[in-house]
Image 1: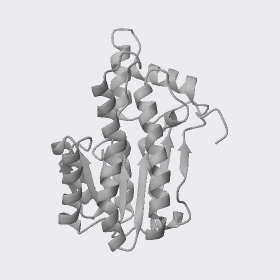
Image 2: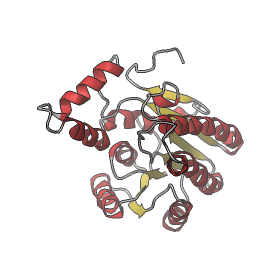
Image 3: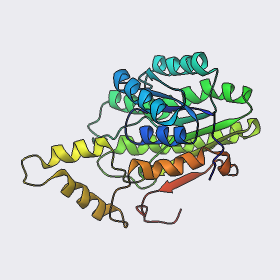
Image 4: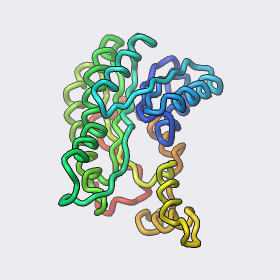
Length: 264
């Protein structure tokens, strides 16, 4: 199926690894040009070069910490300078947390608020006018099932992801008249390098492998009893970015292997 993405320009934050990288490859395979933003500029440049070689598209990288206003400004300026604008923005950068509300300091709340919410606000505010000039576009925000069904050990993550989903709905209402579709995706368990790193640390010296821990998490939380691969969820994300999903706007999609226990 031709998704109609040839020669579109996509900006992807957190694009050098995991879900962001898989989505960059997925979009590039459809003929889209990509700009990946990540804190590790060296890794981002290596992955961007690989994307260009494998898919024959323009692919570039920007070293930027989008939790900072300056990092967002760098992505916006780079998008304009390198591509003259963009058609797709995937606000993907994010990270899990681990704290209690009574013990977490303001600084930690501020850091995650800036990473999960203000990065999406700033980048949308800066890139949407470019999309309008190009006739419309797509903004996709990576939320989490935890925005609806929180995990007890990461209240800051749960709260900021819930705010991101609400921001998505408000932004969708504002940008519909300009031909920009905004949606959020609430993903469940996805086997990213961060999950493998955490599982390896938690099983070190226990006689168990990281795979055992991952399987236990999947058995506890996901009726499908496994983690998704980044490529699996990227396939759905790429579809949402395409004109094939032209009536999909202002929605929150759950891709969670049945993890949500209620009806949404």
